[in-house]
Image 1 (tube, rainbow, N blue to C red):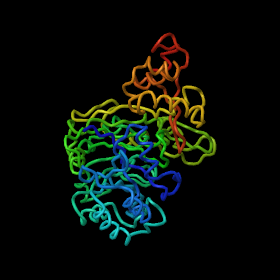
Image 2: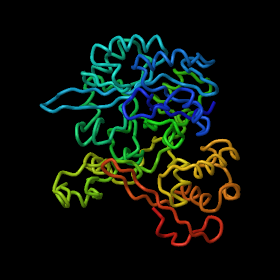
Image 3: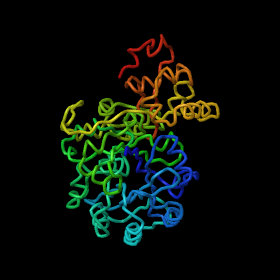
Image 4: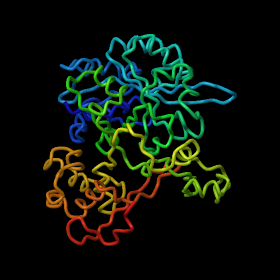
Length: 418
């Protein structure tokens, strides 16, 4: 069975999330996206957990729950807050759990370390190693995955409060870490530049705070599991099995909010080389720049750009369909009824978003939605979209050519080659 999975999402009980984050809405938009497995998010929150128990039913696949036609696995994100070496560290972790009984047992331990009800993504006063030990106290069939590992705040390698290695952060518990989440501002090639990360599976998820398909599934994981189950899913991740863990789908990392160095208040975005020339200070106000993911990778990398480990799993770069539509028609990220009508017309014609982005014939897409959108999708497939990099909390911006010379050909093509 082919599994299209987004593990990292949030409920409406997490801060800065949409009130529309409910199981019915998530299942509805997952079908439009082409996802058949979602993380529940926020199983540490007592009210959300009560809703999950009421709405999700055990499926035919052990450890997978179901609502309508969408499967779910129990997941949560937690923030460990601790002091080491005179510095406060804050690191986010994604947790996958095998069943509700295990979740109840884990929550009874975690509630002693922090307030589980004020935020669906709770802050826990414990080290990463203590978190792993608490999980293993309940059982071996959990997975703890450091989340969005390069973002400046709240991550394993973050420039503000992170570390320089998995071992430094997790100490003796590092042997129980099998996977790392790339996050929107990094992709597998950036992580391949660190030889110390070769043993980890690189997973990708959306960290969605709203249910619509331009948020859930903007990054995801593709598996082929002969007999699907939670244990089979863990096996595929832990073994980095290329026959079971097929590939990840990523956004171009330049599209992420923390790819370049910068200072959003002053509108300053800089490649790390330029930032270093300025002493990592904003040239407008003189304050310290937010050091982005690309800069941090350069600091820790021991391999040249373009290096690919022999056993690395493949990946694909995509952008959400709605955002391709809006950018290719010149409206940026604005959401409108007319844009949504175009989106829904494509979904009704081809079935789901992933089919459109990965395999539907370009000429048929053109007949349905017009040449500009069809050629933008072709450019995405072929990796020919230029991205103005994101920085300091500002998303990057894809730039599509809208002048066409026949199907698949563009004026000023060289300007759009990466």
